[in-house]
Length: 164
Image (cartoon, rainbow, N blue to C red; front, side, top):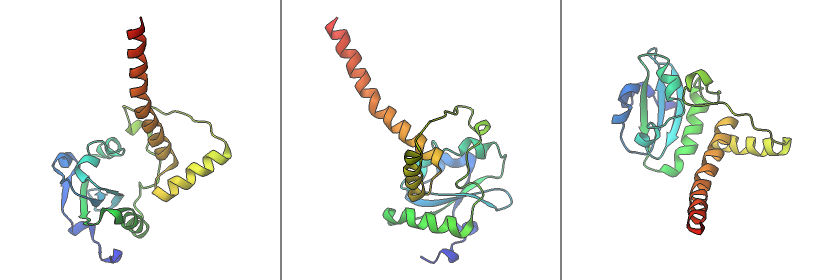
């Protein structure tokens, strides 16, 4: 793929408010403001699902009207990370790899995690491979751990009730 030939302005697009009408397809997506500045680039195997809970949605909504999502469909989902990384390097969007302001996340809180230097370095390497921020990846791991722990806790509580 010739990255320089990709023009987000000519791709299909919907306003951020219309995100529930996005197609269910593998795609690299661009978030643009009313001045056609590329704010963010991401990749997903399901564009519709990704934008139901996007981690930047509150922040982008707070930027006002004129925010829109354009997308480039990808017939080979396995290539998404490579294409996304190349497009980020080429376009240098302003929000990629920047922290999400807590004020833009009214339903979220900040948690401080203490790691050894080795643990932090290992986590940073994983974040770099996924082209994500350190805090995004740490949050992802915590959410996954909570999801795995919840069925165990429910089962343990049920066993205690049965024993009583």
